Image (cartoon, rainbow, N blue to C red; front, top):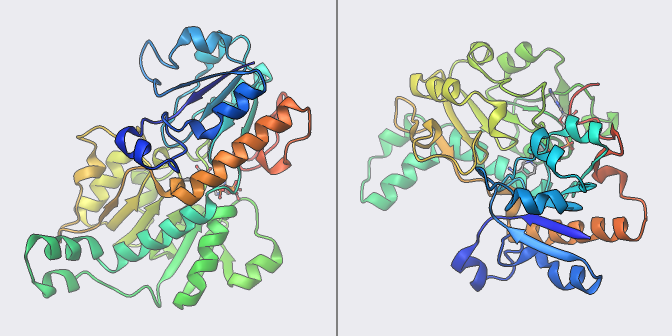
Length: 359
Ligand code: NAI
């Protein structure tokens, strides 16, 4: 079979650090395995423009496509139509919104991901992002490295997380782990908004309250963290209209998908102070252009920007897990064994995951 992987270029870092498995250079560690099984393995970073997928030619003969959310090769309906042999798309990581899932259902192309492989990595990033916003870390760090020392300029917008209301939009694997990690911080209350309730035991263990109306949910939170997949029901969900229902001066963390937020509306809310800050690692376009509004936005007191490139789910620990998980998915496929049901987003001709919207 022909297996095509779209990965990001790691350049010098990938040559020096072989554990950077999700790079073009280190090929998810799959070459020896795939070639020993008689398969052809093509790896490229090309994902944009007329040559997207290296490629349209290669894509047209590909049986299995591997992509990662960190360097999303958008598999559109049009591209899928050209990929006549394509049977399986594997996401090395979590989040398969870069594949047109409805088109995959229609064309009976399976979409599998390595569920759970980086959920701890992201939950830890969420905790870091909440703390750096609430405690006003970034301007403080900027003072430290630029030779300044003016505590009042930082402290005037720094708070404790204790006593605040924190809510997760999406309480699946990551959202639940975030709630678990928030318990020792003695927040005033933990809330969640999800069309699926947490199992009773889990809800009790973290002491979280479910709020069923989104506007009501955001209006009660000092901090909102977004942990839902990107799909028709979440695209642009956090926009000017919904932001008006947030508490004035709330903090927003989004490590789920950039396009869940309207980029201009969020930047405007941070600039006006309506949001005290926004942090995350996911962008509506990746790589983000140099003039993306989220790169330069600051609140009126000079802080409130906790953005990074998309890396929370691609720590070296996570890369090992999603590379191993990708190999396992391929082995199951080649050996005709059933897949772990948690990894199946789209099965043959239907959605198997309930996470990509209520259907
Ligand atoms: P999951 O499938 O375990 O949980 C997602 C939850 O979101 C489900 O409980 C689902 O019911 C809920 N949900 C879906 N639509 C919703 C809506 N409209 N409103 C409220 N809740 C909704 O997924 P998991 O593992 O927790 O990951 C969530 C997302 O995080 C992924 O789909 C991916 O986009 C993102 N992610 C980001 C990473 C990064 O590196 N920044 C790495 C891994 C995941």
